[in-house]
Amino acid sequence: MPTDKRIDAYIAKAEPFAWPILEHIRMLVHKACPEVAETMKWGMPSFEYKGPYFSFAAFKKHCAFGFWKAKLLKDPKNYLGLRKAEGGEAMGNFGRVSRLEDLPPDKVMLDFLKQAKKLNDDGVKLPPKKKIAAKAIKPPAYLLNALKKNKKALLTFEAFSPSNKRDYIEWLTTAKTEATRERRLVQAIAWMAEGKPRNWKYMKK
Image (cartoon, rainbow, N blue to C red; front, side, top):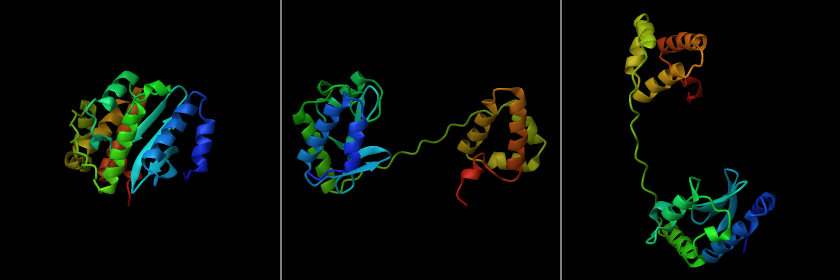
């Protein structure tokens, strides 16, 4: 099977408990999808087949595994949800895996992998994520008072989206000292008077 030396090195550097787990999963991936291509993405071993397919990661005390289209896999016995609940919160679809016994049976894993392969063969895409509107939060009195003294800043703030308003409010209310809050307030008013959102420095021009 075609392998990527970077994944060999990744597994070698992992904690010893992880070696048999990662190698076993790797073997199952190639068995279910012989055409799969190994690579590294976001510092983690990833497997691609006509697009994103599967990935895994090793940590100090557990491993994590994830299907790119996990939400579309048929899982009548709830292996994905049940295992995640038992394993605790962790990235991936199987919670914290610290031994081979934590994984579903090979038959189940191969079924998931073959389902994921077919989804990519058929060109099935994940449904678009629903945009969650940012909830408005009440501005503190000291911000409102400062805005009333600067018409340009006030007009900018009133025209802001809820998320832009939240950015400034959270920046001010998370200040650990009154002196820091005052410095931030002065800066906030100056930026808003120029029509700038809180994170304007990081926005594409």
